[in-house]
Structure formats: structure tokens, C-alpha cells
Image (cartoon, rainbow, N blue to C red):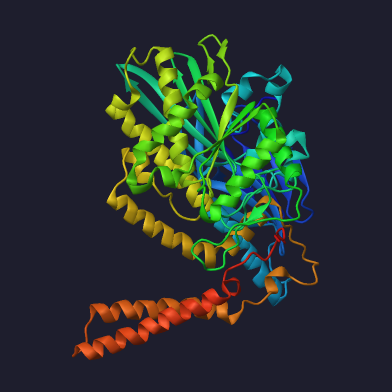
Length: 587
């Protein structure tokens, strides 16, 4: 079986069946889905009824079972990102969720409401930017992994050979994956970020590509998913690969990021930074070892760069991480702690060179992957930098962009694009492309995990910290605060439903969605916003006398502060918590 999926598809809909017709040259296959029995079979074009309603689609994301029954999810719009070694890469930009059922009359009012909520969860996940696919290329593997495969692997379908960590619709494709004969209709979809640029330095043209692959294991949102699970999967784990293609030669540099791999949590409670809590009874070493055993098998040597603060609330996590590495005693793991905020305080971001100098020799040892124009492997990457901060977003992305630039400098010199003694930083046109791409990568990863764009992107884009950047960071921090406290429960539930961490059972006697929201959750945030807004308005619109103005300001000021203090007294009562999946209890 060829490692491709059908690229051109038509969806034919009748009251009884869905027909997905392959329209590629020479194809006669039609995937048939019975809307009553849910049976999936393979038919031919002659079997499509002429009365069917027809529309073009660009891929099948999969199927999911909700209260009303099964739903088919298809890609209805796509945008071309670029070409990757003659393979076209697409971003899915719009989807349609189609019910198998022709009517909802079989549902009670409560079931109708639950089904509507589940549909809104699905649509929320689908509305988050960053779903990518190719019908002819395996996006889930790095160049190095793809170079070390067997002929049997090359003949597998894209779904069979994909790295399941990065197939975000794996749960949705479970029915199709069980039937190898329909695998050419099963399209693995990546979630993360991809950008591709044709660049020129010294009159030499090359392709520069950046891919971030977000893991679907222990996936979720910022404050509800931290640390690791019992299988060793880390929260917000992302594999980022930078690729250069010049004159047939290909070079790749891979880095990873992921939450501090012990059992810890940081549940929202309306405080700006909830206190991280390390589980006091869990077997941290078991999960820690599982995590790094798998990382070493996949990537080789691990060089940990821990960027968290070495004082305050982050200090216990740094100490625990260092202790765990020391206790494991593996020669394949090195640990480097760098207090990002302390070293770069007062906007001294030039001090990041301290870390780069510290790891320069290690980076040279790890090397990068390079294959020449005839397919011969010249060098392999012997390990990866595994960077983290608390969120594995802002600080982490800054450091990853600097390490990637240093690797790219070496690669372009070796390929003959850069002359001896030339610095990548001096190539103004390329530097602009490079910095903006890494800033876009930061924003994409941050929106998917924290709900807003990244912080510190002014440095990534310009190479320096600015006052405007600080203001934008403040604004994004405010938006994060609101989302993390008042909408992240819904976001977490949406991801758990999409990935199959929660499965809908219409026979369930008690729906988890039937848990009523406390009136305080709805009322007090509104009161707080109104009171604070009125306080600001009173300052801007003075009364007839200064005493009148002062009275208004004092009244609304006391109201806003009082409301805020009431909320903080027991903040957990007011946050939007997940309702579908029971999370780990943290002592």
C-alpha cells in the first residue's frame, strides 16, 4: 500500500448513507458510511446514487459519538503552506460536523442541551488555529527518523506509520484505522505550527522550514495540565524541527519542550500566579524514569535546560527536578539550570549569551542531522535540548530560537551558503524572516496552551526588549488571567472530548454537564468588572465638585476591591473547572 491518502474528494449525502468519493486520477474507490448501522465499507463510483447531494471536501478528520449518535467530521477549507521536498503541505482552516441522524426527536430536552454543549466543545477545538496535513508526506516524523526506516515502513499507509504522539485525530480515526482497506481515506492531522520560506543568502537559494509538533498525550490547557501522567507523558510537550534544503542536501535540528516531569499541579484560584503544588505521596521517580526512558529511545542524549526561577514559588520545582536527575544517575541526561528572569532582569537580555556559551560545546557534540544530495547520511543528531520554564512557552521559545540559530549557522556554513567568517545575524533579510517565524511559532504554541499570544515576542522579532513589548506582555497576561480562570474548564473539556479522554455514553444516568454552575461563578466576576470599570469612568468624568468625584471614586473603588477580596478568599469557588474528566488529586 502506498504511503499516500486521496487528495481530491467529493462527499455525497443521502438520507441513508455518506459516500466519500476519491477523485484522484485512476481512482474508483468510494468510502461508504451507513448512517443507521454506522458500518463502513468500500464501494465503487457506480454505487453512488444520482440523487445524492454532492459537495467537495479536502479530507476526513474522523467520526465521534455524541448524545445524538455518531457524527462525521470533514475538512471543508484548506490553505497551502508550501512545498516540502515536492510534497504539498496544507493547513485545514474550516470543518463541518455532520450528524448521522436525520432528526433529534429521539432526545429529551436535557439530552438536546448536552448534545449542543458537546458540539460546541468540538467546534471550539476545531476553531483553534494550527491543524496541518499532507496527503503524500509523513509530517509526524523528523527527517532523521524517516531516514532510518525499513522498506516495509515505507509501504505502510500514512496512518499506520505515523508517530501517534502527534496524530491529533487518532481517536476520531479509530474506526477507519481498524480497516486497512480504507486507510487511503484516513488522513493523519498534526496540531502545532508550520512555516516554510524560500530564502537567499549570497545569491544562493535554499528552503528554510520550521515545524512544531504538539503531542496529543497529556494535552490540555495551561493551569489544568501540568507535570506528567503515570505513563511519563509530559504536559505541553512539543517537538520542534528546523529544516534546511539546499541543492538536494537536507539538514535538520530538533529540540523538545515539556512540563517539568514530576507530579505537580497549579490549579487556578483567581490569584495571578497560583502556588504550584508538588504531589507529596506519588512515586515521582517511576513517572520521571518512564518519561526519560522514552525520550532517550526516541532522541538519544537529553540536555535539560531548566529556565524557571531559582527563588520564590518556582524554587521547589527547580530543586525537585535537579534532585530527580541526580538520583536517576543516567549518563544520557545532563541538567542545566538557568534562572532566566534573574539573569535578564532590567531588560539585560544580552545576558542570554551566558547560557549559549555554557552549552556551546554540548551543542557541537549533539550535532545535527545532514543528508547529502544522493541520500547519504553525513551526520546524525545524537541528542536534543529539552527546554522548559513553567509554561514551556515564552522563556522556552526565546532560548530555542537562539539554539536553533546557532545550529543553522553551522549548517549553512557546511553547505556553502555562508562564507567563512560570515554571521547569520548580519544577513538582514533572512534575519527578519527567521525572527518573525520563531515569534509566530511562539504565538501559535501559546494560543493553543494558554489561550493568548506569547510574551517576550518583541525580543524574538527584533533581538531586543522594548517598552511596547512590555505593555503588550501586560495585556496578554491580563487576557491569560481571565481565560485561565473563567473559560479554561470548558477548553479542557473540549480537548478531552476531542482526543477521546472522555467518551459520551447516552445511557449514563447522570450527565457530568448537568452539574449546575454556582451563582457566585457567574455573578461575582461580572460585579467585579462593573465596579472596576465604574471606578475608571469616575476618574475620567469628574463630577461638579472634587468632593463629588472623590465620593464616586471611593464608592466604586471600595466595591471593586471588596469584590476582589471576596473572590480571593475562596477563589476555587469562582473558576471554570473541567467537568468531564476527573484529574489527579494533588496533596
